[in-house]
Length: 307
Image (cartoon, rainbow, N blue to C red; front, side):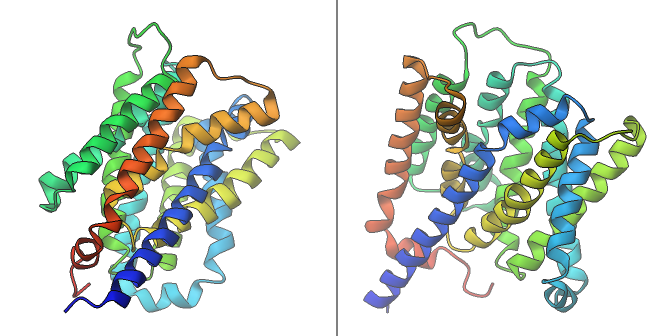
């Protein structure tokens, strides 16, 4: 029998998870200026190596006991998550060489559509109809916010679509694996895996930097600590208590936060089209968040009880 206190507990956990994902989206939205400045002086894979290696070094000491308890299964799962996450960063970085950053933001944001599609196809757990409506509104919002009026395609667009696919797969894998393992240990292992693969890619494609400026060090510190060590762990922990399509929609707020931060600190102003996009994304958020008040029983019973 479903008890009212179970309903309240489920809603409380869901709300906490949503706030954690919003925090992650805000942090990631704030990284744009830092990363852009750093990539003007250092190779993308070298930067990713430093970013994820710093995050891994910070996390491995406090979570060493958790890592030891996890056993080989934890390292395999974290390695898989790290491989997919590295692929997403690699496709996005290479694609940015031949496509506009605003267009890249829209194409990467297509993971919002891919998550429910892949969930229904592979996990046999189709989301509620409201999730499809919210995903549609979110994609329209990201398009208005990110795309210029000229919709011509660039050569790197295909790589951005692959990035979106990897992000969607990562969200679904985290949704499954975060309930099987200690989420903090799992997040630490995946960060280490990204650092490893980035280092291998950098050693094969980029020379070692002779000098690292304070600008690059600042970008490495910001992206390595709050934007990687903290934000990725927030995502892994939060996805224990929220559905994958809901996580995808919350993370779609990243470009909205990026635009707001640019307005506050750089004086950039959104056009009418951009403001309309922000509005649509916020409406999508409301549509996605309404069902839990009516479907708390569904949210509490949709998770496999044995995991």
